[in-house]
Amino acid sequence: MTLETPLPESPGADAFTWWRDGVIYQVYPRSFLDTNGDGTGDLPGITARLDYIAQLGVDAIWISPFFISPMADFGYDVADHCQVAPVFGTMADFDELLAQAHARGLRVMIDLVISHTSDRHPWFTESRASRDNPKADWYVWADPKPDGGPPNNWLSLFGGTGWMWDTQRRQYYLHNFLACQPDLNFHQPEVQDAVLDIVRFWLARGVDGFRLDTSNFYFHDPQLRDNPALGEGGQLVGVNIANPYSYQDHVYDKSRPENLLFLQRLRALLDSVANTAAVGEIGPDRDPAGITAAYTERGRRLHMAYSFNLLGETFSAAHMRAVVEQFEATIGSGWPSWALSNHDVVRVISRWGLEAEAERAAPLLLALLMSLRGTPCVYQGEELALNEAEIPYELMQDPFGKQFWPNVPGRDGCRTPMPWSLEAPHTGFSLGTPWLPIPVAHSLRAVSQQEGDPASVLARVRRFIAWRRDHAALQRGAIRFLDAPDPLLCIERQLAGSTLVALFNLGATPTRWDVPPGAGLRPLEGHGFRGTLRGEHLYLEGFDAFFGAR
Image 1: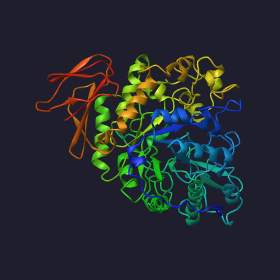
Image 2: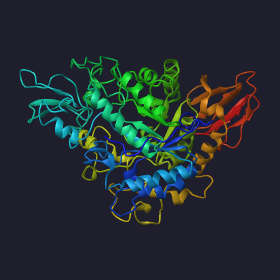
Image 3: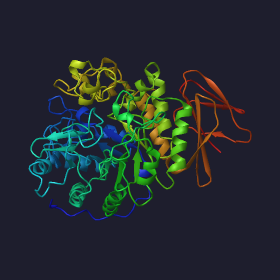
C-alpha cells in the first residue's frame, strides 16, 4: 500500500489526556441515523447528530466498521480496509464527519478489524489460488489429518470447527468466527507490515485512534496443538455455556505471547502521532485481567483494553467489586476500559433484569461505570435507557443469533435503530423501512421525549458526565472499595490528597449505610443523585447514589 499523504505532524501533548480521562461513546453506524432512506444508517447520519453526541459531554466517538464488506457479519468481515462501503457513504462523507467532529472537540476512533478478513478480500483471493503465490502464507493454512479431518480441535466462536476446507488448495484454513472470515497469519512479517500500513492510512486521514476488534486473536500456535479442556469449575468470560467454545481452554488458538511484540510495533506507530490511542477488545478468555495487564503495560503496547467481565449476566455489588479488585490487583501500570453494553451483548437494562426500573437504574449504572478507574465506553442508546429488543426469528439478521437460536441470545436485539422522535416515521431513524424493527418501547424513550425534561434519563446522564469532568479523582485517581452490605457498593477514589467517596444502591428499595467513624464526609452537589447524609448515616432511595468528599 502506498500512502498518498504523510502522517500529520505531532502537536504538543494535551494537558487533558482524553483517552484516560474522558468518556467514549460507541456509534453503531448501521443503526444510528439513515439519511438516504434505504433503511440503513450511514456516515452522514452520524455527522447530522454530532451536536447530540457533543451535548452528552463525551470526549470521543468509536465508530463500528464502515469499510467495504459483503456484510455477512455486518462489517466485521472486511474486504477493503481503506474504502468506505457504499451503504455507509463515501470517503468524502467520512472526511466531513471527521472535520465536523473535530470542530466540536470530539475525537474519532474507528473500529479496526485485523485478526481476520472477508473471504472476498483480494489478499485471500490470491492466497487461496495456490500454495506458492506471494500471499500463500498470509492466512493460516493446514493440511488435513490422514483421515481428511481438520488439523486439530480448535473451534469457532460461531459454532462448530474453526477450520474450513478449501477445494482450490486442498487444505483447511482457520476461521475463529464465520467460515467466510479467514484468519490472517501474523507469523508472516509481511502481514504485520500490511496491517500497519492500514493504520498509517487512517492516521494520515486524521483519525484519533482505534478500537481493535478481538485484539488477542492475532497470533496462533504455529505447531497447531490441540486446546485442552477447560476443566470443571473453569470459566470462559464472555461465552454462553450453550456454546461448545466454552468447553476449551484456548491457550493455543489465541492470546499467544507473540502478540506482545506486534502490539509494541503498533504502539510505536501510534506514538508517532501525538494524542492518538488504541483500545483493545479482549475476546473471550479465562484470564482477561492478565491479558489486559500485559497488553496495556504503560508506554509499551495498547493504551487501554476492555473485556467482557462486566458484560455478563451476573449483577450484584459483590460481583462488580470482585471483578474490579481482581483487575486492580493484576494490571499494575496498565489501564482498563469498562463497558456495560455494546453491539455484541444483550443491553444491560435487560441483561440484569432491570427493565421495570429502567428510568431509575440506567442513570445509576452509567454513573457507576464512570466512577470506576478506567476509561468508560457508553453504547448508543444507554443514555436513553433502551432495553433489549425482541426480534422474531423471521426478522433476524445476525448470523450468530441464527446459529444458536433460540438458546443463546443473538445480537440483533441490541442493534436496533436509535429512536430520535416519537412523532416521526420509524422514530426519525429513516424514511424507509429500517433494517431491524424498532420496538414501541424504544419509541416511547426517543430523544424527543427526553429532551427538555430535567428528570429524564438523558438529562441525568448529561449532567453526570459534565460533573465528572470537574472531578479529577474520578478520572485518574486510585480506587479502593469500602465494605458495605449488598446491594450497596462503596467506591473511594483518591488523587493528590483529595478523596471522593461514592455509594451506590443497586437495589430497588431504600436503604441506610452507617458511615465509618471519623470518615468526615461532606456531600458533593450537582451530580443529580439524591442520597443524603444525616449525622453518621447515609440514606439512599432505590437505585440512588451519594457522592461526598473528605
